[in-house]
Image 1 (cartoon, rainbow, N blue to C red):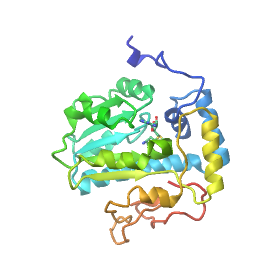
Image 2 (cartoon, protein in one colour; image 1 turned 90 degrees about the horizontal axis):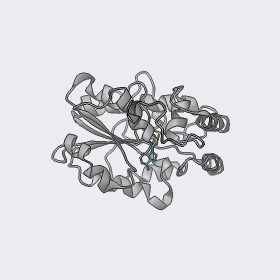
Image 3 (tube, rainbow, N blue to C red; image 1 turned 45 degrees about the horizontal axis):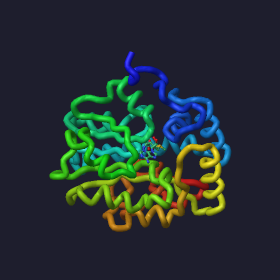
Image 4 (spheres, rainbow, N blue to C red; image 1 turned 180 degrees about the horizontal axis):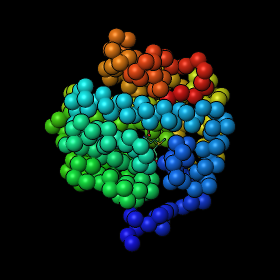
Length: 272
Ligand code: SAM
């Protein structure tokens, strides 16, 4: 049996949680171990509603990909920090109406590649790369990226529930610019970020994740999260396009039957 098909892959450190596996635990998945479940339970206790937020974030990801593929007609996707395969993965959504749409998944967690291979996610239109997204040249120069994506045409960059994993010293928002820079006009970004306007609560949350040993960044202030995309043209958050373009709570972005809710929201301490 190849390593890619072995569960769990033999080179994994199961003594500490990883963000990919803890997030899988929050989503109710089975690709996680006891320390991952402990971290998931701890953040749910600290911020009741984290589980719902993770589920809502997946809904946002799916609506974002549908919008980009169907409304903007973009046919190539670079999904950074893609996470373990779950339901409604980017390639399934992007390729539903257009099977030729191409998707490159990138994640630092080797288990993502192992599970994606086992689920036959990799095919001629979809690939999975194990890499640290902070190495922009490596990601953009990877043979898989070069095979499937071209900078001659608009690309959709996906940074969904990801940049809070990147510490300040690695300048996460400069990374956004580095990735978008080679992409032509008409490209798109699907973006969500954990944020808290209650600084103390955000700090406690961040401390708890760091204490688990999982590499992470921090929960940021909504204004910092907005600054990351200040140079970009936002789209209307309502399905009918009538609402003014702005950042909103991810679980209300273009969700049928739901009015967009501005961040910070009223009933939650940490938003995406
Ligand atoms: N984007 C997915 C979603 O929204 O459902 C998964 C989000 S999950 C909270 C964050 C993912 O980013 C994890 O799978 C983690 O392994 C990955 N990640 C964190 N730091 C990374 C890095 N430096 N390079 C690549 N992936 C990273």
